Length: 107
Image 1 (tube, rainbow, N blue to C red):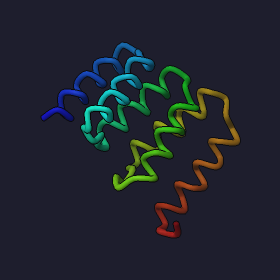
Image 2 (image 1 turned 180 degrees about the vertical axis):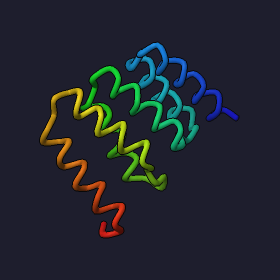
Image 3 (image 1 turned 90 degrees about the vertical axis):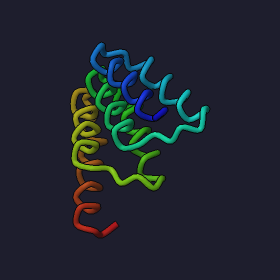
């Protein structure tokens, strides 16, 4: 139940393009031992994309890859979009190559 509450708050921040508040809620969630789920990550990465915070989007994606949650196409599209709107062509190409390998089951 607490994860759902956090996800709702993060979603509200996402709609208002409040990336800093989104990341604060994400950190607070972890401090309270509420484990973020894929919905949490996707919403946080999406707001980072919309606000051109590619660095935070990639940091969240890296954290997700290091855990037990498997990112989906929404996760990768949002992270790739963050790189694109941030003008980070090299990071975008790296991410696309990594995504391709993951989806082919080679990583």
